[in-house]
Figure (cartoon, rainbow, N blue to C red):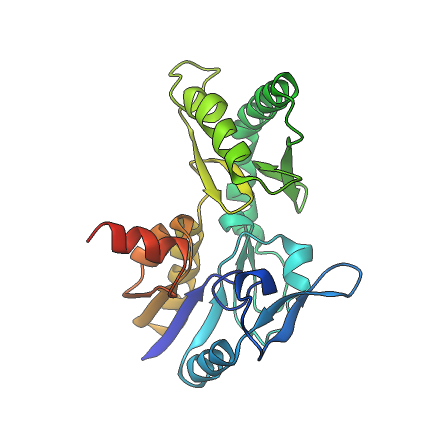
Length: 254
């Protein structure tokens, strides 16, 4: 039986050095546009990757866009899911146009909401004297979600924006509200996503294609964030790295 691992990347297979301040065994694996390294693997992560690669086919399932994914130096050979599930890349690296057509239609209905929450966030940030500004993230000529980062990397600033602006908007039931959207905050990222944009939906699409090709398959899901939980739960088994956001939520629930 063919085995596949749908795996998140950042803070799962690698991370920035600030996340592992005491590590002395780091090797670069992801790079900035300038060519400078930004993310690294530890010895344990390299051992894990080698072990998984012997018996599984790894399928990246990431929020990274096409450009950022191209700067990851790891040997993947099958499908790739990027942009929170907004884009599926075929094994040859080309965009899966059947999936792209489905998502373009969904995002066309969501773009007004993405622009509305961007405006609300920016107006609030200016009024409160915050430096953070929102932007609508696009890839492959398609808008996907609204993202806010704080230039000073102050989690309290994003928490305030989420509490005072985003959550009230999500709770507004009329056509100008965010009833068809959800929010995800992790580290210095605050993202407002359409409900139709999620990794689990893309994983289901890819899994269907793999089953058509191989018959019954065995699937694992691995990720660090609460935004990964849904796609991981759709797999036969899940793997959660120690010390991550999702691991913390799991422990708290026990």
